[in-house]
Image (cartoon, rainbow, N blue to C red):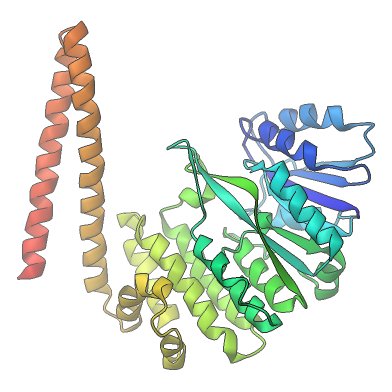
Length: 387
């Protein structure tokens, strides 16, 4: 069976080479490799061509596409450009800064070729670049439910709860074309979420394989997933798009669960400068959610993580919610300063042993003063809220 691989890249000169190297063992003669560079201003294009050169003459159709200028939004336009060039029977997306895990991918490929389906969802690992460690994804517990999801609708509901990234799935190309599936295009990011919902809702058969097919890189400078500002309001737009896709009301609680799960992630990192614009957009969307959708979630542990905040926003209690967010932001700042103080303390000890530690001592004193000032502010805020 012929596979088409789509790799998207933008300003990832340090990562695209290793990504393509990790993909090479997964290619077979007859496969197609499409690499779309979205107008990179660094040396990504040169790295792409350097990695493709050794693949010439191996029976692989190489299709490098250089868009020349960065397109609007995120991966939507480059991914759709690639979809127009796909010639294989099965499709697999690759994020240009990730690493494929050949053993897991080839197991997924073998399982798919033995029994093709509209959609095969595999597992993956998360690589935290800041901590230099691998972790399971947040939806790892859902795999325990796969054996019990025997009928098509049970598998569909389970698939909708999984993280909706495209680079963990094998798609049947004829299915994508028959359903007319494309990524949404516009001045926003996280386009893979509506695409995931379109695919899961339209698929006739969804299969699962609990093997890691790639290591997804996080905590990289410039990465969309590191966003902390108003761009996160795009999730409310995507929620409305998802609602418009639903064939009937039975999936509305799934959509609300998806939104609340993402809100919990946003709240943990939202920049104070974006509090009001995020809260206003959230209130506008959540106020329109029918009570039946809220009640249908019951005691879902994922939804409960942001349930209280979401209900308060839906009721219009924006000031109270934002006050809580500001307190959380101060506490995050305190935790960051505690980490800095610990680091400076170690550095001061080192410098005192070598150069006397004058500069390190001064930096430590400044950081200590800032820490105590913020700590006093946090205590004052807590006292005011308690009063």
